[in-house]
Image 1 (cartoon, rainbow, N blue to C red):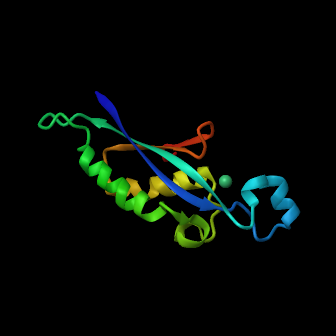
Image 2: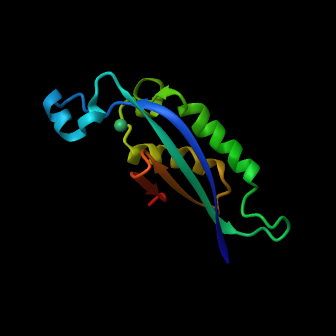
Amino acid sequence: MKVKVSRKAHFNAAHRLYRQDWSFEENEATFGKCNNPHYHGHNYELIVSVTGEIDPQTGYVIDMKILKDIIRSEVEDAFDHKNLNIEVPEFKELNPTAENIAVVIYNKIKPKLKRELELEITLYETPRNFVTFTGK
Ligand code: NI
C-alpha cells in the first residue's frame, strides 16, 4: 500500500528562453515574450510529491520536515530571486523552460531521498501553465 504525500513551495526567478545559434527572429517566433533580451520574471509554484510505503513505526511516508529542508536547500536557496540563465549553473547550456526546470529539480531532489521513494515534480510557471515530471 503506497501513499503519495506532497509539499508546496514557491520561488521567484527571472529567465530568458532562446538559442544562441538561432537568429533573434527565430527565437522571437518560437519563444515570444520569453525571448526578451532583458529577461523577465515568473512566480513559480512547485509541488513536490513523494510516494512510498507508510513506515509502520512513524506512520509517515517521509517526515515532512525532512522534505521541507530538502526543498529549501536544493530549490529555494538555489533558484529564488535568481536569474536562472546567469546565476544557476544547470541552465548555462540548458534553456530554462518549465519542462527543463522540473527535470533539474527532480534530479537535485531524487538523490536526497531514500532509494525506494518515488518522486513527482509539478511546476507552475503561471497559474494556468504547469508541467509534471516523474523521472521517466
Ligand atoms: Ni517566461
